[in-house]
Length: 407
Image (tube, rainbow, N blue to C red):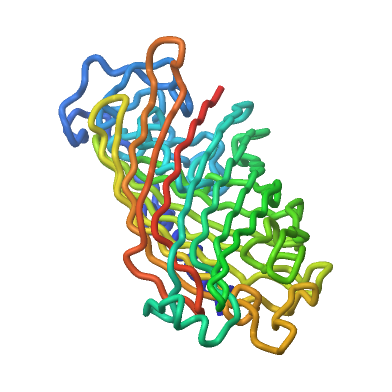
């Protein structure tokens, strides 16, 4: 079901391109009457994409250097290598704004022109505390009625290194490598407490991003990729039963080659923007231990406001849906020596769930000095609703910070 929802969500995210233009190319009116707002006489036409060397300009004024409406492309304004294209009012999508990049928790939201490179770093911290079954909280004592051990708290830290490179104007290649550390606290029926830790590089993400339609105020992107199983599925630590393979949530990788699919749309005005993205992961078989993680679906939407030429803020809703594990790792113990179910995290049919988060963020775009062209961002929030096929640890809060630099 998640796979069908993913395909539908990505298709919906791409439809604004069709609605925005409908393949009808309007003639350009170069008279002042066609301009939505008064002409900015200090207007400076930006470079093709990032505008790292330009002043902050009003892109509601005509963009004389981008009069191309896409008529010359083989698909009209779609997949046109001359993006960004002007609409009939002369407006050109502005990539030199703080909000021209999505909140830092959103990836694969923008493409680059031929020869451009972007380096990035993200740090994410998430804390989970207390258990939930369905949409109701359950106490540790309640979990221990059915299991010998209950998880009580988990933290996850992730360092994500990223690079984007555009070999041509119509495709941007992406690579992301995470370094992950997970820590989980537990309580046993007899009151004993213990902690396990898993730490390793995660799965390498490789992808390609295509600028489907970048014209006027509209920016539509489509991306595909693969997740390569570089992360460990052999994490071990000490438990009450001795040193053992840790349950599924404490493993770092998936162990499988997975397909990634996504699409995003951003609408831009002179001092605000709105965007939405759908993405997901489709598992392509089982790993060496005869299981695969569940498919995932993410749908997110955000609103950004430019306070000045160097700072913007955002509010975002983020929905995640993930399935149960298919198969079972026989190395992970599911019962103690007397046959009592050991811990919920060892149960493959108790790993699915869904969650809706509310997040606030800030983007900084440095325009002067030795950090000119660098971007810094922070975003944090918490769930406003979650439903888990548990008992599972519920998420309490998430924060991400990041840096980006294109050249």
